[in-house]
Length: 306
Image (cartoon, rainbow, N blue to C red; front, side):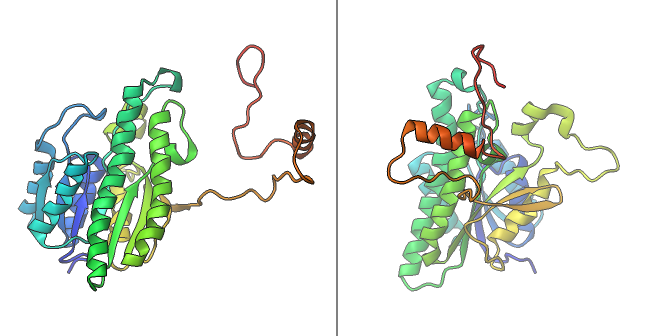
């Protein structure tokens, strides 16, 4: 008996890397899996049906149930077709893992509008469209009187939550995914849907380009960067036993760590009587000192940082 026997889950970007591991583990736990992957390169260019079909066939060869899908998650009609395929093939939908993503790294001043738009389109718009398509189905079922127990797991990034130079487009999109997760949790909870997000730490096509051999496994040691390490917690979040919702978790190796949402800093706060003056703000900031824990830089005439 698996933890998700008879459940149906969509995993986007499941043809390779972390998504592939998610799909395989969902199938091992008894779920019917829609393996979605456009089959493009890591920068979003191109498309091929092979990766999704290979994973789906691997699942079927192992005795599981899976179907391949090559639709574009960031296309409105494509997102609708993915959900429709799950329903037509398996009769219901219980989980959605928004894993599809691309990179086009550049420093901010060198990012073209096209590179900005495409990265935001896949990482953020794709997550929105898939969640909306699945959410509409669950809302209709709930309003029809059906008892819903469903889950969405989004994929944000450490870059989005903590900031990473050279990834302004990717970081902005992934930060928005984390915020979207909290909003979706509050809105979809009334229909029996839980929504969480992860910040995965793993060796994938996207990270290998940045870190190279630094993430390679050492012989005889636990491979903390293996993407399969991320999947158990994702499957748990999507399982009926989980009650977690509206949260973001750092997941990698042997660690799962909750990431606090934005919160007010009780230690750094400026208060005055009535409206501030610029001189008053300048004096108050000097007395309070620079905020701790942030990246506050003072520019020098030479254009550097000190």
